Image (cartoon, rainbow, N blue to C red; front, side, top):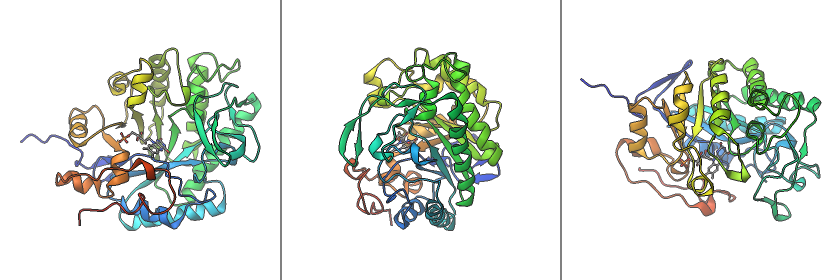
Length: 360
Ligand SMILES: Cc1cc2nc3c(=O)[nH]c(=O)nc-3n(C[C@H](O)[C@H](O)[C@H](O)COP(=O)(O)O)c2cc1C
């Protein structure tokens, strides 16, 4: 009998037995009032607990890492207690949940940082706009971190990892994607430093590896994942040789026995912005020896194919999970999917958040 793998084939992820290979992708939803996770977030995540693994929205590791209003943090007791309700709710439904640790770097604004200037590898502004208490603003040039300041930023990730344990998470994912701080260090369009954190690819990867080392001192390697987006052009991200840069970083990650790397394929705007690596998986799968979560525009059939071919072990779904709390069940019975409403992605309250219907 041909025992072909598909997204319903259970997977051992370190000590965890995932009941399926359907991962809920990290998604910012901005329902954390004053950066504190609310009970509505516990409801939202618990509704989605049938995913093999949930990865939370990006969560700031320090006050200076905030890029969005009502984004959650993990650096105060109140925030940790807020997250405890979430992990308890997910666990009570038999789910598994990793916290996505994040520093926005240059993708911020003084009005979100108590008047302080955002920090980044170099004083190069990202492109695009941001919602702030003053309305929509263009991204401005950040302040370049001094070499001596960088260990403290690494420390913030370590502390975030410790607090994630206190909050009851099953593991953590580092946000190394989408043009935020770790990505800004990696790519030469945003990193033009002259010290040991800039210049050569080895140097640009140093920050990422120091963060991974710090958090794997807190968590076993097998409970730490990292998300990378080699083709992402969001906020003006650019690298002169992304195959070499991300290839080096991904090969360097082999030395850890991480839970997974989470690789994002280009989204439609990346494809129109410039010539990017597409598909990402084809270039980087051969370089990575561990588990890969692939992401970006998957439907059930494509997800089954990528798992059956062994090109990735897990597939994450973003927008489909917003609108379909019972996505695994719908996939199982080939039910129609609800359509997500982008107007409520970043809104407030229950609408478009916890009120999408399930099959029953
Ligand atoms: C509303 C929304 C918020 C998102 N927030 C995050 C985030 O906080 N962290 C992250 O790594 N990716 C974030 N993403 C990207 C998703 O994780 C995913 O990479 C993207 O939606 C592509 O997957 P999909 O085609 O299945 O939606 C977000 C996407 C959406 C739609």
